[in-house]
Image (cartoon, rainbow, N blue to C red; front, side, top):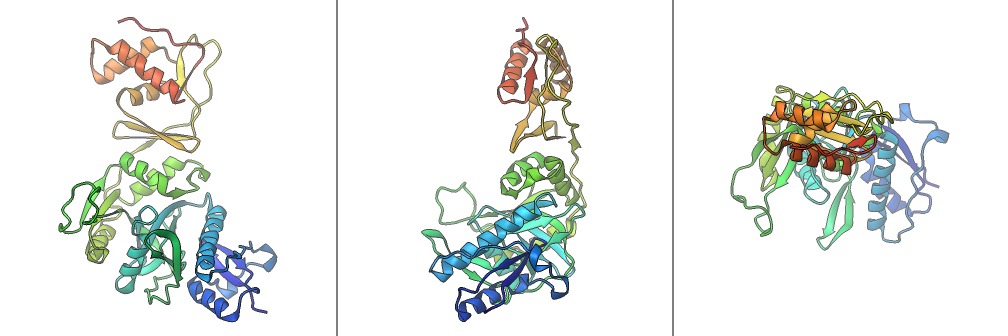
Length: 376
């Protein structure tokens, strides 16, 4: 009877029962997961190891991919709240500096990891990068999932990083750059116009724009105490986010190293907003106040607000009104505040009342009774 397959993923250890598999398939799985084998000196007691079930799919290729997905899901669930987790591949220099390359599923993470780590960088992961508050990165060198058929994106062959001869990173890893992958596809006529022959380039992304792009590519972000603050602080610590635009990932090594060298040199400023004290008092006489929220930040005169799991971006009047409504405030007062910030306007009352209505509609504000219409 073969020993269980032991896997360390995102700092947690798991056990897979492989007794039902023939010896050659067990050997193949052990090779795929070789770099995720726990240190024998630090093994979790058997009784405390979570078990990941092995699918009963007959096709070994689809079964192995299903296992990879199950391990990743289990690891994310166990690691929730321990740091920012991004859907990204991670590549490391010999000194342990990690570039976090974020991309949607099926848009280049695995290809980037395979090509960049074959010669130039150490392989950290092709799926999920966990960055803790001190910028340390938890490696997850899982098997690389390679699509076999373009019309069946879930039919993926698993290749262990050792099978692909990917370079091994040093044991201590630190995030130094956060990049959004944007591959220019010369064959995609529906893509935005771009010069397919242009050299690879790095383009800075503003903080709020970066966060709106990154949030859908995070896992368990809301498990953190201040999710937006944590993500904004990570971005600030890394000197901002840049888009890496390229045609062939093999051509980007120098740019990635440039981004790593610049990491943390230009902090991105933001302010974290104290949480709401709750609903307005019953005698608020129609005055409005911020609705309870989980987190919010202010950057570049905009507000990014989180209530539940959905981020809300507020600009111009919306941001001014929300910031002014830390406590109950009338729409008369809000008209004066908005004009003092944005200047006099003949339709100020109408514009402010419309903005208040919109904020009430999306749940960013609450009101004691009703908002009285201000006359111009």
